[in-house]
Length: 317
Image (cartoon, rainbow, N blue to C red; front, side, top):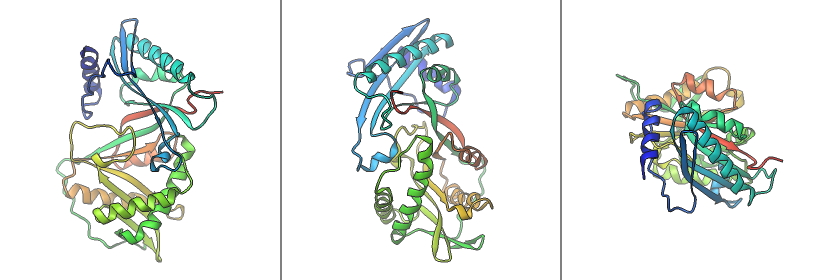
């Protein structure tokens, strides 16, 4: 039976046409859940994943992750009531397996940002918006040309990164992770810099044109790293109706470089390269509570697409 999913997709298309239609959940799946209430229906599949502390994926949140892939249909009041009931039933299941107050457990789900009717039941059940996946579409009639690098930027040099830069790229990425960990969506783990360095080394061997670095007096002080959207390593990334885009995975600037517009110019250089290549869209993620991220990325042409809602710990004390 797909009527709930069909109605759900029609609702999402009305508020966010860039997203791909969601498939119908499998009613035979052990994690399937359905709640009807007051003229609304919420259904979906509940999942649980446990990640080893030394896994590369451990930085993307808690080690024990309860997730829900949800569809909703009905009147607005019915959607709020049925989603609230589904969240209650989900919490009951989580209470059987989790310990209250354990910060390495979480409940998370991703929903279209513009579907504001879903916010109230989530807030009522203790969920908070922690992450935004945002999109920048190729500007119409873009006349961007591929920037020549190396080039000068504010007295520093912008150049393509090489595999020899991997250790420094890993260091900067870990510093960004440490900053974002304040806001609950990611977690700083021991050895993160070393893990990131290994990933950069491999990516740059395969695709040497994916990363730009800012170098000042022989030291790297900034980077922008992109990769194809279908290769995005982050969990819960939105699936767009269109393909062929890029994900801006990392943008970092040393604190000493901030405040003078250098970051915006570095990102604009990457945008010019992507636009000149005809990249239809670029996506990225940022922490909702970070007071700098939202305003900065809005100025750079990005708008929210989906929001990650989370309870962490999964069960409060």
